Each structure stands twice: as C-alpha cells, then as structure tokens.
View 1 (cartoon, rainbow, N blue to C red):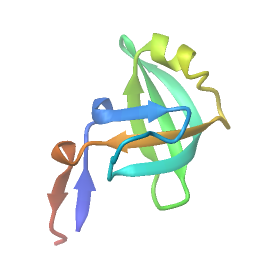
View 2: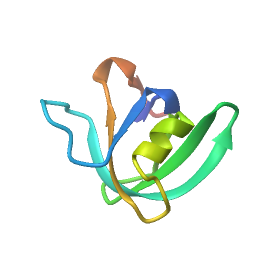
View 3: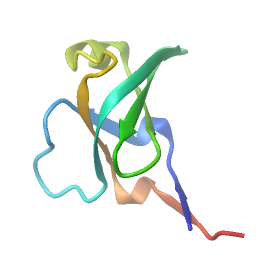
Length: 86
C-alpha cells in the first residue's frame, strides 16, 4: 500500500501538537527551498520516508525552520490518498 498527500496539506509545529491528530510525524528539518511564493521543507522522520511540507515564508520564519530544527508534521486524514501496490 502507498499513501500520498500534497505538500501544502502538511502543517508544521515547533512543539508537539495538541488535540487528537492521528497523522503526526516527529522529525527534523533536512532542507528548505523556495517554491514559488512558498517554502518547501523536507522533514526527516525516524518512522519512514521524509515528509515534504509547503509553508509560507512567514510561517518558516515564525517556526525558525533551519536544518536540524525539530518539528512535528501533521496531515489530516481527509488529505491522504491510499493506493494499492501493483
């Protein structure tokens, strides 16, 4: 089974998010690059492949996103597409 989601569907937090989000990955910023009017942030996770988020430059600055910074990536279940293998 494969899953995918748009980078714009990923929310980043500097602290563990409150509430009951089910799709949360703890990780650290691996890299940042401009993407039009946004910033693409690659988050390395211990649970599997990297997660790519797309945030505004203001959010990147507010969260102090730099390589090595700890972050939590969150994706709503309604934003995830599931595909069968093969």
